[in-house]
Length: 67
Image (cartoon, rainbow, N blue to C red; front, side, top):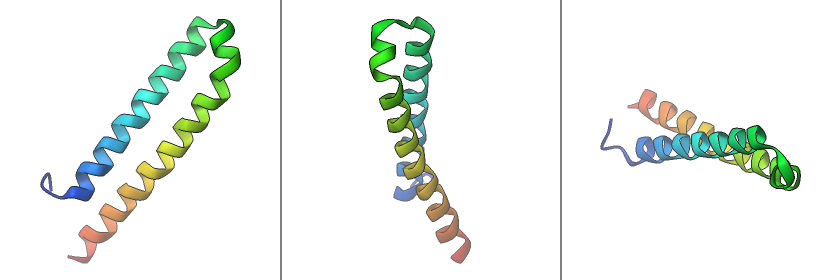
């Protein structure tokens, strides 16, 4: 399973989602001008990365179920 490239891409995508989420939560906690300007943009990036991660996970599960 760990040698499957799709699994590795899905894992990396999940780590990227986690990083964006933690960055967004950190900026929310600090507040200030940066949060006011970029809060929605950060969460849009998270949603896009999460969409990619879910597609990769579903693709991996589908391919594994066929073989």
